[in-house]
Image (cartoon, rainbow, N blue to C red):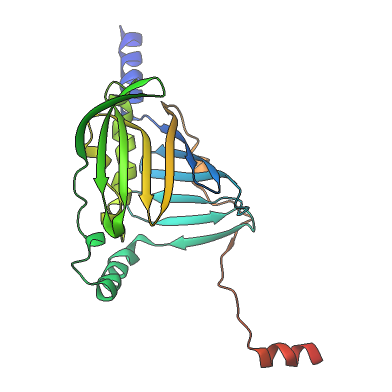
Length: 238
């Protein structure tokens, strides 16, 4: 009986402490990006694995959903740009002064609208929603209500939206938590450009906490020093 109770406690703990790994493919006119999002508790790691066509080598963002602290890692030159979450309220106020407090980017996003249409995507029966954001942004979202294990996935997947809606431009992205299922495809149109993001997989699986640590061989990013023509000429003479 004690062994059974112990197994029950372990199983219950596993249900509560579930990590999530989301894999996506983003396609633009000039590049294709593989994206991996790993979530462990309040920690989230967004990794752009490849950026074929642009040559920038991708980037990694490690964030804490609770504190809003983040760090952008740039693997190409092994530098990191840290951003304390405590700075965000001040940054929002500064941007409101620049763009105006009534700008749509600062307002909670409007809910996605159900078009009443359906379409099979990637082997899933999906319902089609649309959303309109600031600056003429338009999105079409294909939502799979019967996505496998969605109830277990949703709690951690919602943390992506929790993060997005806590930042400077919360009105720039829809709140996917309002949708009845998993978004398996998104098409975004803005300023004549189209980006299509397709879900490759979303699985509850263990995530090593070490992936949220900044590697020891990364240096703090420093802005480039721009020398005046006079300074450059003087240095050349020496």
